[in-house]
Image 1 (tube, rainbow, N blue to C red):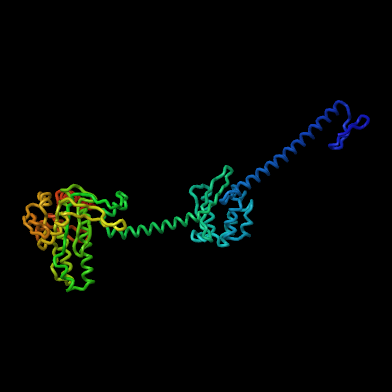
Image 2: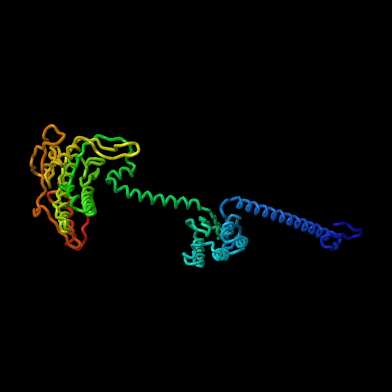
Length: 463
């Protein structure tokens, strides 16, 4: 503004001439105020724009410094901003040209279709094609929850975490989890290998020892303990002589079948099967678990009777196949203190039991008559109330200075009323009453009563 001569003032703002009286002076002041306010507003706007640009630059710098891929979408699924790490995933697998098109304003569906056309998403076709994939992703973006995993054509695995913004858009973080996936695959392969190894190892160990090792209940170390065990030895009479008269393959199949059936019975009764020595079986009760000395002895005798009965059944089947040999078991059972645990070197251990009771059981087995079971005095004292009378014998055994007092028990002969067998479609019942101990007999009665009720009602028996 400048002053002129006379009664006029020229205002540079718009070139208007304002008369210099009181009213015109007021208008002049108002015009100056408007000009000043406008200039201040423009200044503030420039400052605000500058601050906004600076804030935007700081945001760009911040997301560029993040190692993950970052992308922000608006409510219409258009890119608002993203960092170069996000574009790099596309550049490596779909090309730099496609990556360069991912700019603010581009739709999520457009660049994903272009990426699929370049072969970036190999698993999409297995999921119904790109259109189905995009619809699935849109649905998931409406309500983001669990992270999404996606494999790219170059083998890269991405984990996508999404969060809904206040404006209705989506903020997505793409993390390269390829190394994690490789470790998972390696861990899975190792787990499968260990499970396979564990399964194979279980065939070489009794269930109790296997469980003890793999439950980490005991340290695997050379630390035997003294325990009172009931020891069992069995042997097939005359089996060794069969080697000369039968083919080895035939004998191998027969022996494996026999040992399999005897092992099932031993496991069912809770025995620890120490080892197989040809056709002989060495097992014991009382370690690593025990239900008491008396129960262990009674269960061992029940197991022996069940084995005798099962061998009779196997023998009939073998005879039908032309094996006319008479197979019979000799069994020796003793009860006494043994040293039991891991024996061997620091590199190789063998879980077993040693002691006088083990030696005596082996000697009694060798002295027993075919089809007979010999018990030492202590075992008989523990089981006599459940098996009834037995024949007392004085056995002159190798390694013992005086004859050993033993008791011979025999299982009921075929045709006795104590054995019940029924095989029909849907029914398999075998009860050897002479082999049942008191506790087992009570369980058998309870189950049979329940089964009878369910059969009469047309239902199913339940244990």
